[in-house]
Amino acid sequence: MLIKLENIRPNPFRDLSLYPLSDSKVEALKDSIKSTGYWDNTVVRAVGDKYELSHGHHRLEALRQLGKTEAEFIVKDLDDAMMLKTMMLENLREGDTVSGERESIRSLVVAFGKGELSLPRAKGKNSQMRNAPSFLVGGAAPSSRENAYTASSLSEFLDDTLSKDKIKIHLRALEAIEQGHITEEDLQGLSLKKAKAVLKAVKDKVDSFDTPKKEKSKNDGSTSNILDQIDSAIEDIGRYLRQLSELGLEQDQVAELKIKAENLMNIAGVMDGIEVSPTAEDGGGDVIDGEWESVDEEVPVLQLVQPIEKESVPLEDE
Image (cartoon, rainbow, N blue to C red; front, top):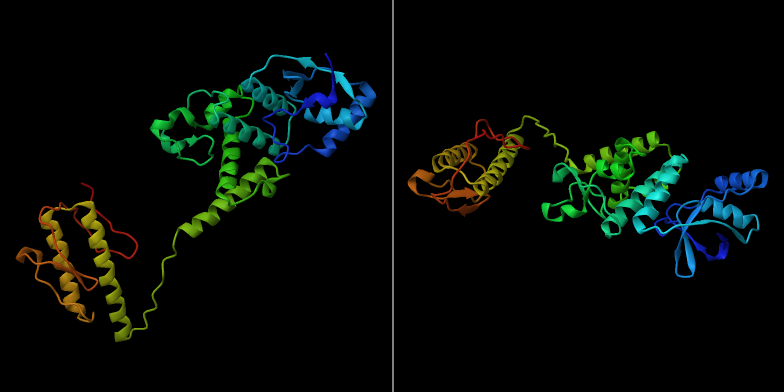
């Protein structure tokens, strides 16, 4: 069907602001059209008195730059799902850029989140899924399984044109962009291998921020320095005891922990304003950070099997 180019709009799932047309590709198509003519196999759908392109955006731009005002197009009755799928498959078969693949995945997930298309049911643990339209991993609760997707379900929708492993990399990139760690511009023009390297560097950097560095105490051998370290250890014990109490511990074991803490405080004898309380067996409370905390006799407890360290509380499995 002969259609005026001014009446043709882009595919509604193609975000030209995020993924603009390639000038070099347009120029190559212009040369091809000049030498071999225009291939009239581009598909559009009718929307009112206008038409929407399913794929072939570079070809349409090449025609416009060549001064063409109309051309032959194939008109088909396509729903939103087919419009998106046709565009993606055509781009992937043409060996489109890595950025183009990523934009196709982004468009697919956003459309799925809006209910504009259906994906094969996602399988696996909730912690391994994403919840459309978000790209964050682990965001799919059982109640929202209808919005859950994985790299496998996306690959299946695309008839395995794009492998699951490639899709995983694109999803990690889109997740990092959503989190604000990088921007789309940071990945523009990069091969999949280089993009993967960038994502690994970003993850390592984020992990370094999330994991506090263990402070190394400088022990100069002086009495004041040793006592300061004992004070710090006692404060840590108080904090750990509160955490253990929240977990729920057995009464005889919480009493044993308290006796150990009181013995340490008696040995130190340096914390101003703290008096050692009677043991839990005598019905007393416990002094933690200078404040009394009562002990509920019915609170269950886990048993400590080695001294409490600064960064972890090793517990014996029940």
